[in-house]
Image (cartoon, rainbow, N blue to C red; front, top):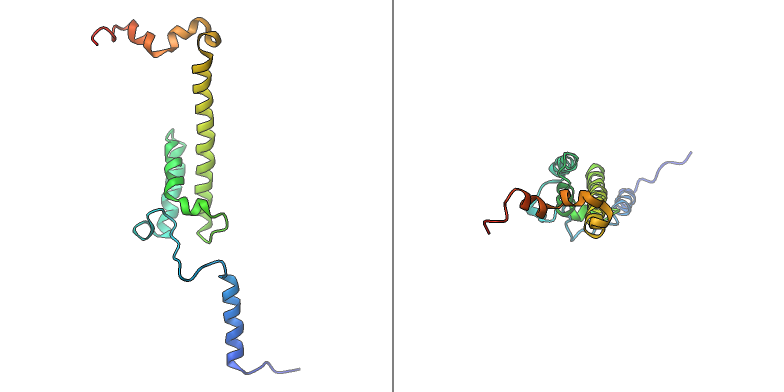
Length: 143
């Protein structure tokens, strides 16, 4: 049985090379922040709490909070292989998916309503459009 090499410089080189290979994707001269406002923003621990709140409140009929979540944590969303907290990335990506689905549904409804119009909705169209409701209650005469 051979003894391990007793050279401490050799051991340090192995430890440092392992540490360098684990953090090789980081640039030591560049500090990355999880928020768009950089060092003025939140810490990574606070960011997870805020991203979770934005994500959950988006389900309470506030889907624009999903868009705010994506904008505020844009650095996390932009880098798919980032070294940020995994829960932070999960909440921001799910917010992006939720807002995309909401935007597609809203756009589809708006285009169907505006393009289809009276041909699509028939006689119900007069009850759905706002300018007919305003005339019905006499809200257009004062202008």
